[in-house]
Length: 314
Image (cartoon, rainbow, N blue to C red; front, side, top):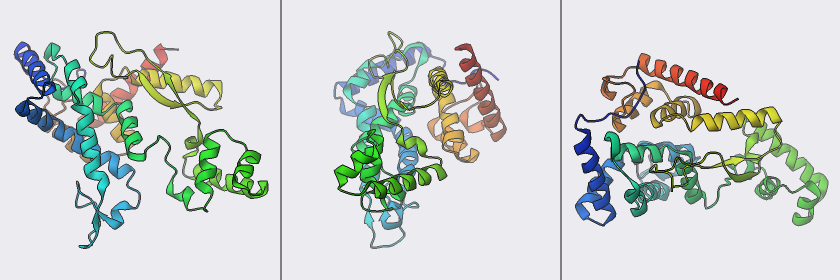
């Protein structure tokens, strides 16, 4: 099976010029061009809002009607509409089709505008920017922590900020023994859910340098927000190798691994998403003809590639 890539047309030169002209016209405010760009971005945004919103929906869908996915929301006729769905769609559309981004696009070597937007929408910086907008900050205190008691969220944020128990107790005007018990309960709860990493203090560092001359070189694509913690030297090195190797996978490879391994999505749903986004995993095999066996083979081959990339960097 050949290397995966987004499908291209035979007339690459004409497509290069057409895609670039469309992006430039939309950036200049042409109404028809902006409408066409929005249509290209629509299936990408629909998939990502479905993924992102449901990931952080928590209990919202029990009490509200979902504005984007009616089957997900409350069935009560008098339920209020949830504002996050349409808000997320609008935010993603603005982020993907903003003027500066469209002006940077160059449809060289048969590249399509849809592939460009797909690559951005499936990047970690895009995900982090959406979380910034969604939560107003990068830190989201889990519901099960907030429900422990009235000061639990404050203690969680204080721990994330590196404060010790005496300092937290002094700020909250409480006994150190009470704060110590609460801290232990928070750690136990996170550990049971395999979410202890949420207490890693975050800092922004540059993991890679954008390739000069690429469309994403001026789009912070080399900036990833990662946690800096007291991990062992071996664990830190493995994390560095994984993050570096991940950037060498193409958009389709990252998409499949994230969907199937990180989000644990069913293969049938991933295949539907590939068709909706028109992503081919191999030359001569349209997305509509990709089956589960080919998808699993592609995933296995990508994991092997990722492992080799990590090994080559040691």
